[in-house]
Image (cartoon, rainbow, N blue to C red; front, side, top):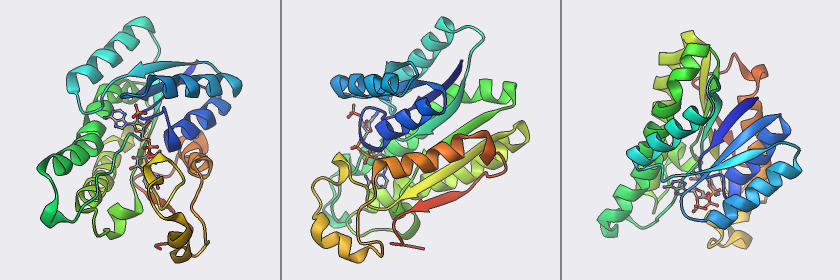
Length: 242
Ligand code: NAP
């Protein structure tokens, strides 16, 4: 059995990634923070895709919760390990910096950066011992070019890109690859409040992307065929930023 963990697998891009990884033959560990019924729906879709999965609830920001969940999973699966980790959980809380509430700065950085640290550290060691692993971090075009109204989100995603490059160099000799994906506008709950009809006019491909399109890219980076790609940031943004 091959295992993959997707943080924020309950909805949006994370759900599409869970389904893609199931189609690739992975038993998928679906993480979520608060929407249990959505995680359950993802599990049903994973089963429809022909594989089994399980739900692993934890808040990626909470070190103890993450460690307990991974420890328990490892105890229940002796000799097995998580060979693919997709750090996908993310939030946005937009406002211009001058008026940004403290909590919005801290929470966005915590979910993205502390979340990356907590979950990656918890699953990394067995990848190094087995000399095979794939880590894919969900960054954003905002982390590459910066976005007004998103200083917190841009900082978090830019930091995640830097962490991707640093970790890739640390673990390369153990044949573990670490890459980031940088989507532009993708149709999910996260972009549900945006004016798609006008925003699509600034996108060269004249449309928002679909979660399944991002999942195809993640699936490739998670595959053995992507074994010579590491420390990269791959954009998927309809030409919005090149
Ligand atoms: P979404 O539909 O809002 O889903 C967010 C997911 O993250 C949910 O599964 C949510 O779980 C989970 N999550 C949030 N906080 C968490 C926490 N503390 N611990 C564990 N899970 C948590 O968002 P999305 O659009 O699919 O975005 C997925 C990733 O892609 C994010 O990192 C986002 O920044 C990035 N991204 C999205 C876009 C876009 O246009 N949509 C563009 C660039 C990058 P619950 O269901 O339990 O709340």
